[in-house]
Image (cartoon, rainbow over all chains, first blue to last red; front, side, top):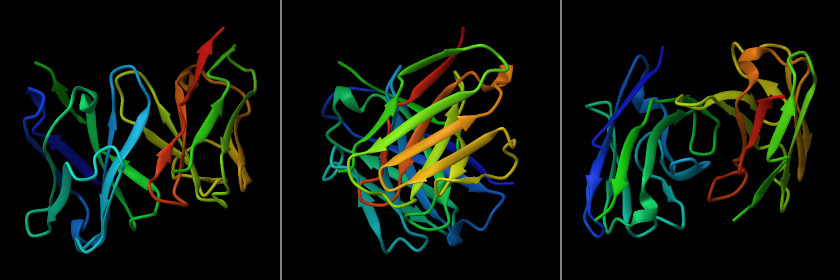
Length: 119
Length: 107
């Protein structure tokens, strides 16, 4: 049973940085692509980024390209999202999710970690 | 990016009724279209993948159809636990995109 637990969320001022983590268990982490998806308060889902099983391929939403970096450590079963130059519209709950490949369906989701960007 | 438009925004129905939700893509996504259900305070749950395949454990009352630009999620007879928000998502092109969602509420 796949288990994904996000952490690292919090309140941060505009322009600052934050690093999110997603701890994976219950499956062979190194075999799966991993995504970040976010949801602003009261709004819909927005895909953020994906990384391939071995970290060789990465794709980003235009809204975060150049500011966010997705990475993974397969030895620690951990996915990360480094978020720089944060803006108020980056506020929301950030979910990690796993998929068979970078463009495969998102089959398992974590519970999310909240991020608030505010002065 | 491929814009997905879901309609209606809100669907007011009674338990036992049939729900028909639409997702329209601005350009063809072939069948790389998935549906998710999200209840308040909960994480999204995969219902349908590749336009018409039910995910593991999803009841048969949920079905998906369509290809190209027009897709439909049908709930044949609404159960109380089905009142939620439903999102479609395309995986055909980068960036991946979600529709704005359809809220199915109790009438």
